[in-house]
Amino acid sequence: MRITLVTPSLSCGGAERALVLVAEGLMKKGYDVSIVTIAGIERDFYQLSKGVNRLSLNIAANSPTPIHAVWNNLYRLWVLRKTIQSLQPEVVISFLDTTNILTLLALFNTKYPILVSEQNNPIAETQNLWSKLRRFTYPMAAKVVSVSDGVDAYFDWLPKNKRAVIYNPVQPIKDEPIKSDLPPGADPEKKWAIAIGRLTYQKGFDLLLPAFQKIADKYPDWQLLIFGEGELRRELEDLREKLGLTHQVLFPGLTANPIGMLKSAKLFVLSSRWEGLPAVLFEALSCGLPVVSMNCPSGPQEIIRDGIDGILVPNGDVSAFTSAMDRLMSDPEERARLASRASEAVDRFSLDKVVKKWELLIDEVLKEKAK
Image (cartoon, rainbow, N blue to C red; front, side, top):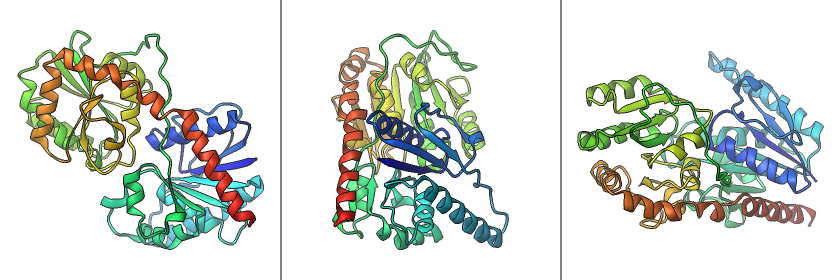
């Protein structure tokens, strides 16, 4: 069976990581898998196995004016339609909201069943043209596949038979130690709490910094490492200086080896205001790390078992976040207790289980089409 997956790019991100894992999982099951990216290969962060066919359209240029935006999007629709038609897939799976919309519009009035994967929670987005287009186009999809129950709840305006939930997979972490080059300023003699994510409002690092600052003096033997890039880097660095955390909080940027850093850490923290299903939690748990996370909509409460392999705190509650960090940073035995159960996430969200759910859903969609 020929399956085409469409995504904006293979840049660094949880959705892109999930797409690569699912594509390779389907390929190993014997499917003929192609990945179409809107962006060019210069945006690539993840690498594909040789058995996966890759088509890079390189049509993701910014539009300087509204007129250019209309023209560029019409051009993208035409190129995307022609490309997918050339592959002649039995089913098309699109990842991420704007690409989902473009794919549905590009393949309007064609024979291909289209599954669209929602990787983030639209609950906090501003109402704009794209959100209106989502309402218009998503009923055209054979299935809207949400990455968590929390995301699926947003789509209650769609019939239940149009919706499905499939978690993203977690990749097993090898037992042997993974070496990693230390980022500048990281002290190997100190304990590390690690956060990973884009430096944006969604990720809540402006909440994490004051939460950590309240106990920083109590733990001079700890550092907080926040990996990622984004538009708020300057503001977050300024906040770090204002809070007097210059040497205790680092912003090392992107890391090509997050697993190596996680395996070297003592604690993982997630301060997001909202999520879809945060892949970094999977990676942290897979590395056997105890976790402190905001119980944001959505995802964390579907991954973390509160008090078993991590601690969930009320969303946006900085004081509660501080208390939870304090509890674990002060108690190595409690960290070890939570860490002893953390790696069970590998089984709960294994690639085999996730790929099997995609196979079942594809079979269901194709049977519906054949009626």
